[in-house]
Image 1 (cartoon, rainbow, N blue to C red):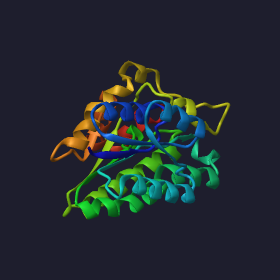
Image 2: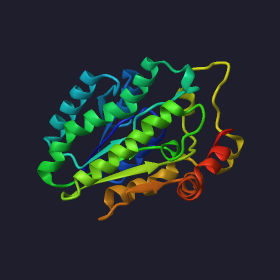
Image 3: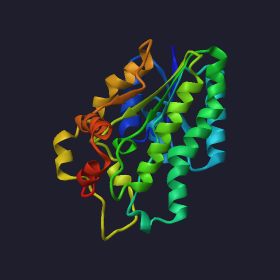
Image 4: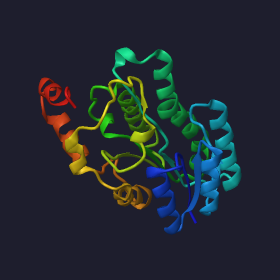
Length: 256
């Protein structure tokens, strides 16, 4: 039985993935920040670890617990946890930006760095990150969140190259609009100027289960893809970013 550690399992992508992979025969270790959410996961039959990616001590302790629970044999790490700080860049303080990066990027780096040696010892493993459509195209009001996901994309590219001579594969999942509680948990800096998804996004929004086939492929295929773009919006954005002039992209995105 292969073991996967999933971060951010209190709801949404993390919870759906944990449930599906457990049914698929994986040993799932699920993490969340709050003890109340941990109790809910335990009641659903999961092995759990408390983890706050914004706290280096919490990350260190969680990694140590995972390695102890698995006897140092971990097949996969799904870096899924994260949140969004929304607001015009001129309104976001340094401290708020640091918090955004601490959870979405620095914590991911630290956790992966601590768990990677166990995978290297077995010369086998999968490291998967939840990125975002705004890790491809940056839109007004989402600058902090987008910057953290751009960083995650670049970091994943380099990690993949640095592990090219091993059997550890690195993949990014770029969901686009999914029906999760993510938007409810966004830290809106400008209460009088709430950042919302454009109305057209609703037409392309999918349930979080739509991500599962891509996750299964990333975990199980002999040659997983580097990037998995889940929704039509993400696929179109990636093509447009590559083909359209920057000025035209600006005109398209400035009011989104």
